[in-house]
Image (cartoon, rainbow, N blue to C red; front, side):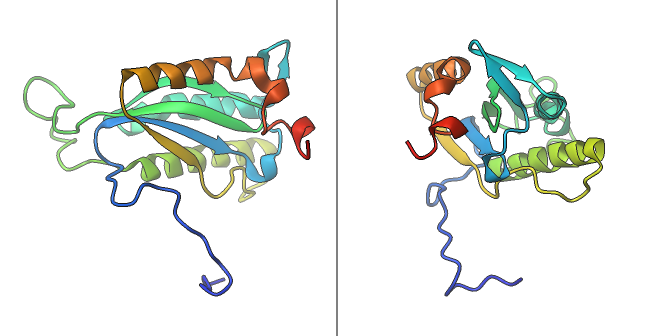
Length: 179
């Protein structure tokens, strides 16, 4: 169905005029469609991954193989969402020595492309394993935060690592909906 601007009032949550292909660290949160708990359960502050959660983890950790200018930092899978830090390197310095690798010249993927690919890779593998081709796994959008300095990076890392311990208080926890 074509987009009708009178009915659909989607507003971008991205920073206006910000270049999401530039080198830097980005904190991302991606939720499952309808916040469905597909990826496992938290027991005593530890995430116990389901087979779908294992697929999501494998797809996340595979991103640098598809995007050589991507490095991954802190990451956690929660029952119905993920948190992770993606670091985009300057593609002109990725490669051997002082010259960029020939395959990297002009290959600067935007954060949105990397997230789209992750969602596509993981959805396909989940649907193949479950026999449900084309079934949406992820919500349409995602949250991102541009990490601006080392202190910000440290705080985001702590948030990610402590997230399973705080599941009982998390607004994404279905038991807290409506409270």
